[in-house]
Length: 145
Image: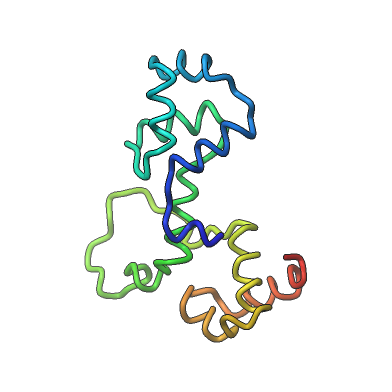
C-alpha cells in the first residue's frame, strides 16, 4: 500500500499486463501503436486520463481507484473541505459517497495499528475514519495482514 503515496501509473499498468498475459500484439492493435510506444507507457509516471481509461478497459482493472485510494489515505476528507460549513454553494459536479474504503485500505490501516506506527486516535483524526467504523474493522480484520 505504501506505493500509493507516489503513484507511478506505468508500473501498475505493466504489472497488470503481466498478470493478465495479454499479448503485446493485442495491445498494439487496441492502442493503434507499436510495441515501443506500449513499452514507453510503462515508463510513464503520468498518463492522460483517456489513456488510463483505455488501459482500465482492456485490462479489466480500475486504475483510477489507485488515485481515489491515494486521496483517502493521504488527503483525508476533512482536509479536502468535505463536510465543511464554509462551502457556500453546492457543487454542480456529481457527488460520491464520502468514503470508499477498499479491503487494501482497511488492511493498510490495520497494519499501522498492529505495528504501533499509529494509534487508533491518530488514525481517526488523520484519516477521518469514524470511531465506530475503525472498531468494527479492528474486530473483523485484526491479524489478517
